[in-house]
Image (tube, rainbow, N blue to C red; front, side):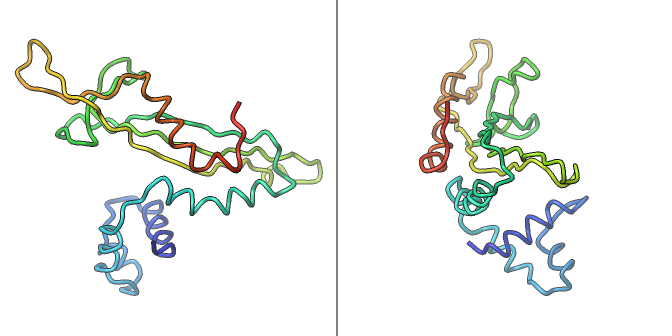
Amino acid sequence: MDKPLLDLYADYLISSFGPTTATGLSRLLDAGLSHDKITRFLAGEAMTSQNLWQIVKPLVRQVQNEDAVLEDAVLVVDDSIVHKPYTDENDLICWHYDHATEQTVKGINFVTTLYCAPQKEEENKAQNEAEDVSLPVAFRFPSPSRWCRRPKLTRTRRRARPSGAIPSARTSIIKPCSKPVFTIN
C-alpha cells in the first residue's frame, strides 16, 4: 500500500467541498501526480480492518506511552447504517432495522471501533492544548445472511442478520488490535 498516496488522497477527500475525482486531485497538484496513478491506486487492493490497524498501531502505541494520557482509555464500538433508499440491493446494501428511526431501512451497515484516551489536565497547560485522543482502529461491514420473501410481495429481499449477530461482529473486529494492548471489562 502506498501510504503517502493514501494520506494525500484522504486529505483531498476531507478538504473538498464538491465532487471528488482522480482528475480533480491531479489538477489540484498541477499534474504533479497523474490521474492514472490515482485511479490505479483506488482500483488496487481493498482496505481491510487489518490494514487500518497496521497504519494506526504506531500512533496508538505512542499515545499509550505518553505521560499525559490517563489510564482510562476505552474502545468505543459503533454500529451505524448509511441510508441508501434509492440504490438497488446488492451484497453491501440491504435492509436493516435502524434503532434511531425505529423502522427498517435500506442501506449500508458498518461497525467501527475507536481508541479514545482522555488527556490529563495539568494546571500549567493551556486548556486548548489538552485534547482527548481518538483514533480509528477497526471497521467491518457485516454482510446479510439470507434472502426472504414477504407473503404479500412477489419479490425477495435480503435481510440483515438478527441483532444478536452484531455482538459477534463487534468482537471479531476488536480481536486484531486487542490481544497485546487492551483490557476489556
